[in-house]
Length: 120
Image (cartoon, rainbow, N blue to C red; front, top):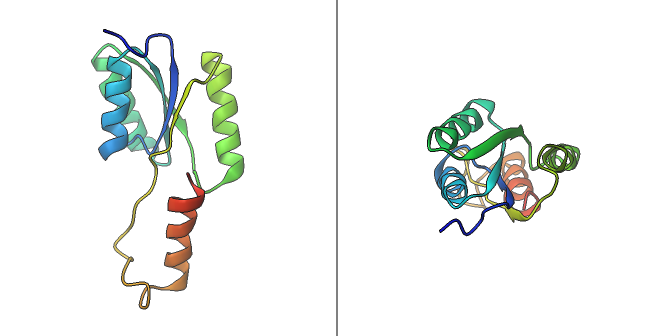
């Protein structure tokens, strides 16, 4: 049963992990998937996997920490697919620079806050 047939979904951070799995699942359920990903290489791999399985996906290179990038991505998704039905805010994560809040560099702390909190 294609529960998402005819729906258009944006999935942020869809280049790997849970985001990629969600893109594959949503497409298998009939959704057209907008892969919103900072890494073009990772995003293109997700698109390739979705299409290889018979789904519809397109990459929209996006930095969720940049409001103009997100605005442009949403406008481009609507221009491409004609609408937007689902938004899956998945982008987030940490890097090797993370550490206890009392020890981590202030720049890294604010990068994580901007991505994990404001990116959503």
